[in-house]
Amino acid sequence: MREKIIAGNWKMNLSIPEGVKLVEDIEHYLAKRPLQTKVIVAPSFTHLYSINQLNCLHVKLSAQNCHESKKGAFTGEISPLILQDLGVQYVILGHSERRELFGESDALIRAKIEQCLSMKLKPIICCGESLEERRKNKHFEVVKEQLNTALYGLQEKSLKECMIAYEPVWAIGTGETASPEQAQEMHAYIRRFLGSICHYNETISILYGGSCKPSNAQAIFSQKDVDGGLIGGASLNSEDFIELIHLRELM
Ligand code: 13P
Image (tube, rainbow, N blue to C red; front, side, top):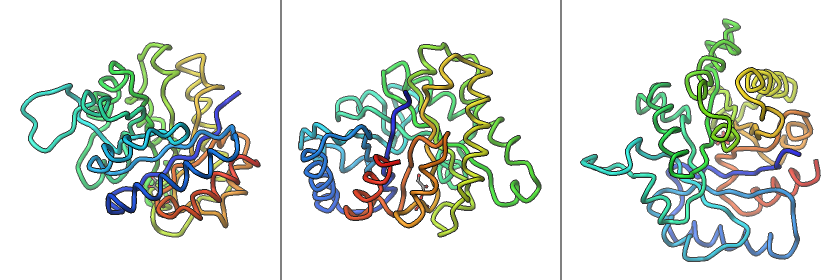
């Protein structure tokens, strides 16, 4: 059985008190009812210490990025070793905002994935095509190339620790979502690709991300190969995020 997942990528939002309150609210909700759905939040690095101090039993912590080295002279960067100290279990890698705005290449993302895996941090590996690439019907090719560079040649025991997030760039923060059919088609493609490189394609979780919110989540989460969501805007308030957890649990 694949895990059901709801992960919140806060990006560069929320003050530390706001972030702590949000996690307290989610934890409180989860403490009252046992759910199968795994709930993860990815705050800014600066928030991790305070949130880890809450000692949550239900809400798991992710980082939004990390450096590909364990330590060294890399001013302004965060090492996976430090993330471990902060109770972080997951790291989002290869988000399209990192690729586009900070010039991260497939090769760099691969190096980060390997370093995280060596430190027992689970990568949430993002992939997805631009609007232009979809218009040119290149979306499968683009996603395959991204995932191939990220994953090909990794040991099976490493691959099974990874999670994939399909985030079509044209759907991120735009209010435009992939249709449930478009999401399912790509998720099934990704699962077949995973099957070509390892035996864990039926157990690796594939999340959808891109303007996912309570009003459209039900149709997306009910797709066979959609295991959950990587949520941006709607992860910033407890009502929407808890509603998304609830919808994922039901589907
Ligand atoms: P939105 O849900 O705000 O579109 O962001 C999605 C995303 O980028 C999650 O990583």
